Image: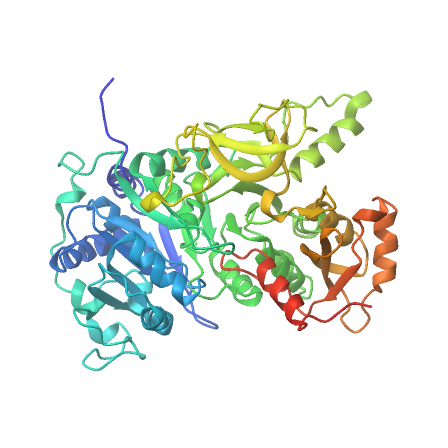
Length: 580
């Protein structure tokens, strides 16, 4: 067989040559028509950007950060930076300022592309420090760039750069540029656009991502060209997200969250159109975007879909808004039966639950039910129950991903769907370590298995069911209490819209569970005694929380998951309302 490197450049060449007409739409704000370009246009913008970056001294495997929303311009950076042999580093703008400074420093970013409206975020990070040691250039982007178009500067909608921008500190050796000036008048071809020209090795880093940092400093993972290419193939398979050239994919999940779950690259590979929400991801804006662009698939964290479902239920045209969509991918937190049933029954949209993490690129499992279940009348009811259980699980292992659960002594446990242990995974897009030798996460003696920190069971059909994060389990009097089980039971109460369960210190027991409840009716929340009685029907008394809090909204961390540390701090400070 011919030895052809699996690189982002080869993926991009295929997309440009075969699927050049695939559309890429970008939201332009409330009441505005989305801008539309195509893969050919994105490629041309990427070529212009690569020439500009070369002029700024980006050579070899230097890192280029992006502090951008989901746009066609951001997609051009996804194309240009790895293809030219540099390393892409999408930065999550929701990280704390000191964490943004930290990840820019650890990644060794030389250049950062930043959207005009995110300049204050970058300014805060550079003021708080420590200053990223390698950073030399800030490239400011605007609406024209978001639409996927290079220069000229006067049409880019960014401020003049002769004076300090949005409070950006004037640091020695740091130059600020307008992306329009940087990309205008550039050659229309680049060496990296030739698939036969020398380029990066498939094992070289293509992109860098960092964990959310909710339990400590964000930790970095470098995804190789090979892993990006194979992950793009894996997530496109029918047993995963099942996308192809007939689809239009809307990655609502931020492009700074594990490369938008790999969907931009997968869509390029298979020729699917793409719909970018820009910074407008509220329910009303998404409804308008879906109406205008008619995506067939979309992906986001549960809080986005929960808000959209509630919004659609208030609109007489809700079904029309969703008429193009067939499936939505949900990850980042557990999916609820109400969300699955609501989209299926009222809008004919299938909700696909998926599991993954930064270290798995992120695809690990997708909850499609087993199509080989028997369907004869005698077993139909059991099969329906099994299919529903599978659909609400974290998913079936993706092609190429292996998993096992191990006990405290490292012994491999049975795959019976019942026995719980720590989940470990292995695969061609699973990380073997972290940047800068940062500790944690990977088994120090068996680096070929990633220790996820999740407690889970695995059954004989490859379905994964997480019970908790090891660090989230409430350790009370020598026994373990599962927050996720408590959350599932509390959500089943008719007066509860959402709940977060976490451990709080207790002098006698070490820890006890705190349940922070978001009620369906904020004017008439359920009583703590009623909720405790509701739980007592399913749990032993010692597992039932005695501490209850009332939420106006669930605080979210940078990844869109509930911020348990913020709730723990508020409880300790006495600023969290008690539910009586």
